Image (cartoon, rainbow, N blue to C red; front, side):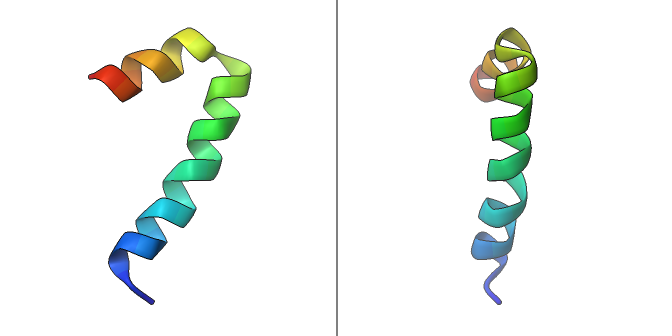
Length: 32
């Protein structure tokens, strides 16, 4: 498995969950 694929598969669900739970926090992480 490619590292980039692993990172994408790991980060995207967490990002989606965080975005649903706390959009402002997700926005801060994305822009940081």
